[in-house]
Length: 178
Length: 197
Image (cartoon, rainbow over all chains, first blue to last red; front, top):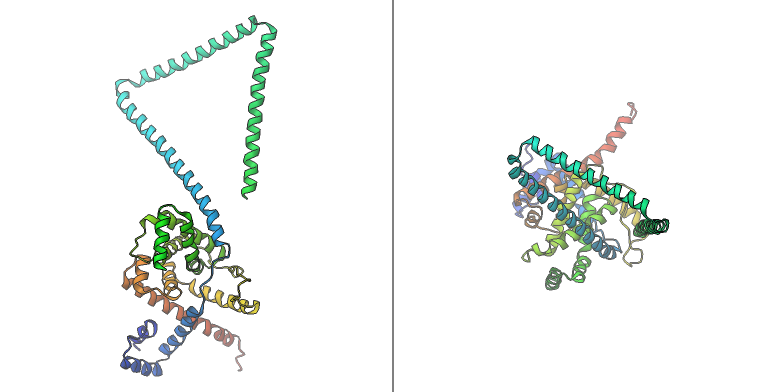
């Protein structure tokens, strides 16, 4: 049996003419499928209509105020990350462009030689500085060495304390945030 | 209300957080209801509603004053929930989870009535959770927020005819589910009945 347009009338509503209503009623008397569809739809419609609007929790506004601060911080972090990424990206692009411009002027072997000689020169300078320090230690009187040692030790201790305090602060803040 | 909204929106656009909080206060229930009906779980709905307001706050300058604010914000909520559901693809409703109820309000039902309301609510959730996310959003907008088909089409970025066909399909699906749920217990009984009867 053809259930159209009755199925549409049942589900989407009649356009309002009495003729349509009469036709639908006549059809419902003879068609169990459409009668069943109408019953079920009326039940579903009743359930939809009778369900209330669920209210937001009582603390929704205070949550919003707290979240707004968090959302803003998150956004700032995201912006900082984006900025950093764009800087790094820009630097990389500039580096690639520079190398594209400069590299053709040098052969691969000359570049390797340049890099190797720079590394060797750097190592030589480190070695020389180390020799100078050792000779100074040998020449300097014991008291001067002790003072320098105490100063260096003090700075190291101060750095360790500062690091420890910052780690402690971060861990305490995390607990408070939770 | 519209004029007050306009004033708050203008102030919020200029960075007045208090004005935006007034908007949150006014629209918290429809937005929360939209998220709750879409996601079927109180915690997720709360997060989704908060995220909706944050998105609205960020994009307030893009808001077209010709549109109603409720339509605009419900559209943000609907899109966010649709995305969430597409991401999750897991069972959406847990029977143990229901929204918190304010026991201090005089209009709040008694515990007995509450249980019955929750049962009705869960049955309804089961029913609408069978619909596709976009169809579900359309049904929620139509039956809870009394939106017209034109408004729904605007909110969901669909044509009016697409909304009509989605609503028709959803109604048919819901009616069929009701039919199945009333027929199945009978079928079950008959299956187990003694052949002598």
